[in-house]
Length: 404
Image: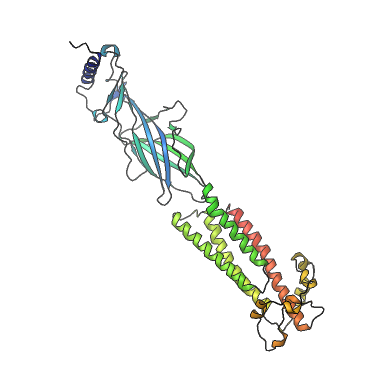
């Protein structure tokens, strides 16, 4: 006889294998204590990603599946201390594990199984699961998504959680390869039993890493608000410049909305708050453009009638002080310094020689026609200042509501 230990071990293993699987049917579920063997299962997540456009959670996992077969036991001392053997998974019965909430099932790979001398099978196959997920994009890009993996078998009515990592859960992500965008912040595991099948429901909560979006979304949003408000502080006769600023901002916002349409899914509800902020800003800037047209008319048209006395008292009273209009009555500029822009926008009423710049005069020392122009220009400036306050409060409220 050959005394080589290596050949002896091979012969013992062959003998063991032949004895264990004589008349073995891999299509029949093994028995344990007179009942179909219970299956224990846990998973270790190695990578996750979320496809927002298709509403799917993709996970790369390692399954850890255990079951026992009381007919597949032996004494290691009788087989040269062989305590476990490796088997091709096609040789033995295995639970038909599948992902219920997906379109392809995500069946595990055919990796070998390990059989211990006490009849316990251990099978650790990798699998890639793409599960349907009901995404909540309301707080994008600071959103948390909660998705579930319903993993089970149509032929098993009971599956036990396998705490193979020594922790109090059968879902582990200690070996997780960090995604560029997502990190797991919580999980939950429970068994769900149906009429003729059961499955483990693994709930995963993932947090988006949103630091990059600060530069590409929130910084431009701040600049848009600042420029939109600063336009109200330009002199009222510079309506062309104000309208140009608003027009450029409208183009920028429209570009961002098109970017969001390409990046985010079309949702029936829960529109992202960032998208609401940009669309609201677009509406506010459109209204602001109309306001600036009115202000330009008030400041540059040559008016024949005085403004109502009530408005005049307000403009020259406390309201004018609060709106920082008092310096218009104190610091008059020489007539020779009136701006070309003012003259270009003045509306002709048939008396060209009275065309003047209303901001260059003091109404107490000038002819009535110039005093009338001054009051209308002062009213135009007051309108700008009032809407500056209103728009500032509106933008602040929208930003707080949309968490921008």
